[in-house]
Amino acid sequence: MTAYEQLESRFARMGAIGDAQGILHWDASVMMPPGGADARAEQIAALSTVRHEILAHPETVDLLDQAEGEAGLDPWRRANLREMRRGWIHEAAVPAKLVEARAKAAMKSEMDWRDARAANDFAATIKPLGEVLGLEREAAAAKAEALGCTPYDALLDQNSPGVTAAMVDRVFAELKDFLPGFMAEVIEAQASQPPPIMPEGPFPIDVQRKIGIHFMELLGFDFAQGRLDVSLHPFSGGTPDDLRITTRYDEGDFATGLMGVLHETGHALYERGLPAEWRRQPVGIARGMD
Image (cartoon, rainbow, N blue to C red; front, side, top):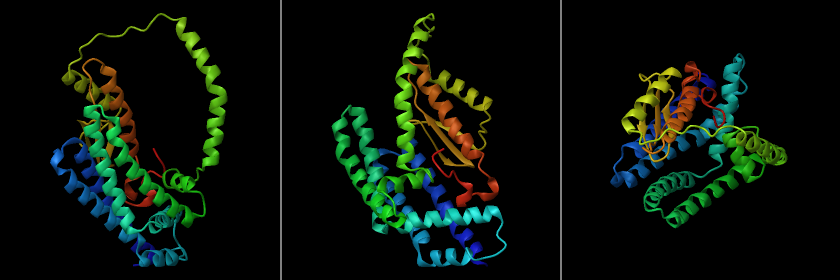
């Protein structure tokens, strides 16, 4: 195989591992019994480390160097190669031990948040969240050194390539000038209208679920390729071929569940629409936060 073909094979393997992580994360939020949290953290950390070892391996950068000199690569493969290089820079900058520690800390923080949420105890989230933040700062510093930029810009490049803090600052400066006056106009316009009609509950959860599924189908969601479940916080996960959407329901407010369903269905349809011929390749995944 050519160097590029070898890289495609490596990235396909990493993509499959990432898919497995996605399903494990979904299961942790929807199905996993509380006693499985420690074992799940070990599983996800192990998979994160394996992916890191494949991508950060010295052979990978050698293959990247060789592939970039190959003739005859079409624009899609050139773009794929470019994204492979960007992924390698980010991954190789972070030590394997830090990759493992971040994965474990993130899982522990989420489990602690669930307990704290049930007990309405915000203080209980401070220490585990602080550990996550500290490890993320370590990773950001390592990436910043590799990329030659600030730590925050390094994290932005990871999630929204090409975006910098200076660009974000300009956008927020414009919003800061525009929003106060605009909000005043909106409030004035709303005050001139009759109050909205608010349906009175309770709204049975089974009925809410059926309505949500009806809207998902109207939007084009294929239940042969995905499902709808309940979690403490709505999210869209899984893979483009195995979409996992969650919401949460409130019998006193039907909008909570329905808005969660509609929002997450949008994410899922985006993922489903990614190019199938480039599954598990960098060019076939969302380049930024969708």
